[in-house]
Length: 492
Image 1: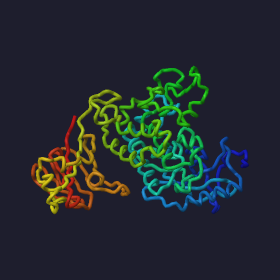
Image 2: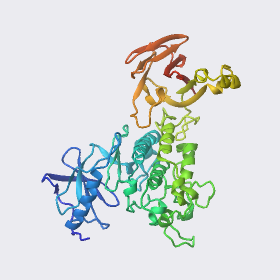
Image 3: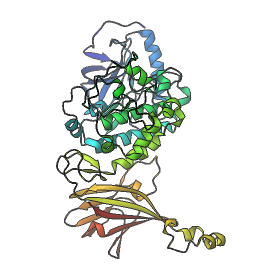
Image 4: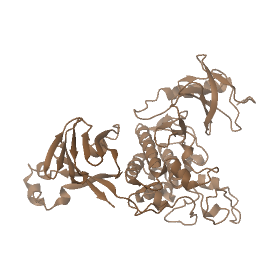
């Protein structure tokens, strides 16, 4: 491949002769860089060499264009935000034009970087635990949709995902679609250093949906815990517990680069249940940022079996369900504004006692007598009419915590319906908390609001005023065999 010794020009021209004036670099990945232009929502991806030179080779251009044409025909599911190529740059520059929302930044803004002086403050200023969980939940959902086709993304890393610049927002976009392929068509070996699965790094397998899961888990751990999942005490310069990212193998007798060991899967992860030789206390206390289910998924991914056997790793859908439940189990400290899991008795960051929070409990009631009403053997054998056997009837399906404060809060169709995974997540019940509470039905499905034995049916956009949300039970008839109950409790 030939390259020209050039710097970034003031503008680039696309294949339809439109000029795109470069304003600033947004981010740089393993295979190129992304630049913002003077045109709203228009960005440019340029292919660059390892020494940061623009690729300006016409033969390479034709190869690259064929690759981009393959991406354009991929059937991307609705709800997966990908900035797809729209126009190629004009020869000989290798790259393309795409559209991206304004005010987006690389997800690397949510990681611990050398320039960060106060990790706790940076964590808070970039949205804290709750926002990180919400962003990771959206990412896992998008990757789950892709993998159901199955499409391999190929290069999940901190450089190829963009998020809202505003810390109050959680918009997520995939920016680098160059390498996306149906799994059966994927023939390349691609990864950003520090994010590759062992089988990809060692060159024994091309990228797969399993390697995508591995890369996603690395990003998730770094976002949540502020430390790499593999760089532990075996390669720290000393055994200090500070936020130093200066790794060294001095004194270990091992001359292998730690990045290389980690990449090849030859290093235990820092929280490995069966090998504590690479423990590290760097980063946030894991119990404050990870749930037990998350620990299990990270172990399943980064443990010896996960490193050696890709098919043993958890699915992206398992990550989605786990992260969604975790995000709905957070409360916000009224003092320091950090978010944390509601099971904590006090804020783990400023140690101020937790205020009361509202806990929503969602149950399904199964009408077992109706399910088996035509089967005399079943009803007689198991006595399904006996309502003392409540374990046959009740099952808690989910829950959600709310910061108990004035304002509007929402339940989604995940709480009020049996929503399909492929459905958009939409608000279905509005809770307007104040001196009195208003409950509003935002869905087309009628809901029954019961307050101290008094029932009020709410159709679409109807609302009812109640004095105390804790006295409310919402009933939704899902099918003739199943009813959903939503109850509220104020907890310390």
